Image (cartoon, rainbow, N blue to C red; front, side, top):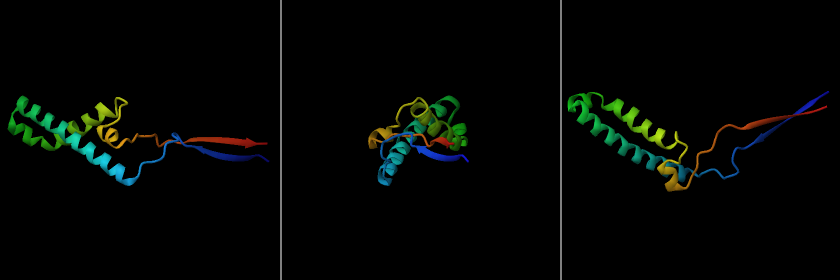
Length: 103
């Protein structure tokens, strides 16, 4: 009869970040994402006028501000500014499952 052994291999040997580091990282990312949002808001206000910019303020913040920030950093394979500040790195959550069959 064959027996199978399951081995989990972690994607990175680095230790996981502590909770205070993750909070500082998130706060810095939120701060820099708000800078991008403000720049997008000002650009939209100059392009279409204040009335339309105020009407689409929520969409501008959630879509253009945060998404543009994360696409320019994480999407391009770079660290976010919060990660650089806290010296943290994103790692993949996927684990490699290796099955060994013993016959």
